[in-house]
Image (tube, rainbow, N blue to C red):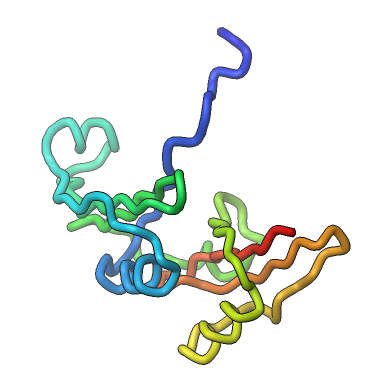
Amino acid sequence: MEKNVAKRVYHTGINVSDMDRSLGFYVDLLGCEVISDAEVSGENVDKGLGLKEGGFRQVYLRVGPDEIELFQYRSGMQTDKTIYQDASGIGIRHICFVVDGLEETYIDLSAKGYQFVSEPISNPDGVKWVFLKDPDNYYVELVELP
């Protein structure tokens, strides 16, 4: 096998419980752009995911040159969110967005009722960052680069 098989990240997939609510967060609040919105189902989907009746709504979002995939299963979705209670759990723990004006973004989102883990943190290298949670309790990091 060739070294460095992975060439780049194509997208990050996030399973959501309420697509419209999540689109309100990722599109209306963070400014991601919807590039496709489709119902996906069929034998290949079930086989490829190892599910029965694995149909889902799939929305691709553009963030700069990158993409995020949001998906909401129509049936059989797990409802146990205990693994998302804090940042120390095993597994993919957060997605990070680069923003301009982190302090202003923090103030604006706080005024809209979004709960942050802390106030923005400033590192010695000039990087500023803060965590908040999306509607499904996933950690979302906002970072301002120097």
